[in-house]
Length: 121
Image 1 (spheres, rainbow, N blue to C red):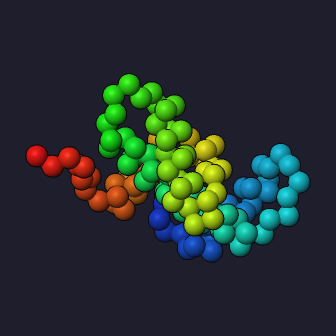
Image 2 (cartoon, one colour; image 1 turned 90 degrees about the vertical axis):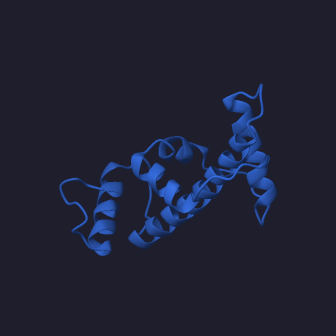
């Protein structure tokens, strides 16, 4: 959220500002419309949310001896196995940026619900 504009902006003005910023700051040729930027963000959100769920499930296994890289590789395998089109996770660069953002963390908590433990005692 833009701290100056806050939440008092319409979706139309918000995406118009994103469109203007994108075209003013891109370092490549692109003719993306405002609608295509909105659609791309929707795809990024969906796939990164799904991948976050895969990472959480791998981390919840709490396997000893697994490095962070091992867990990410396992999450990529899980993502692909559960994808309807059997796609690889292609947005690692987006996940690396988003995963530590406060708004993203809070949103993941909201949609993730309480964690459950696989081994009941």
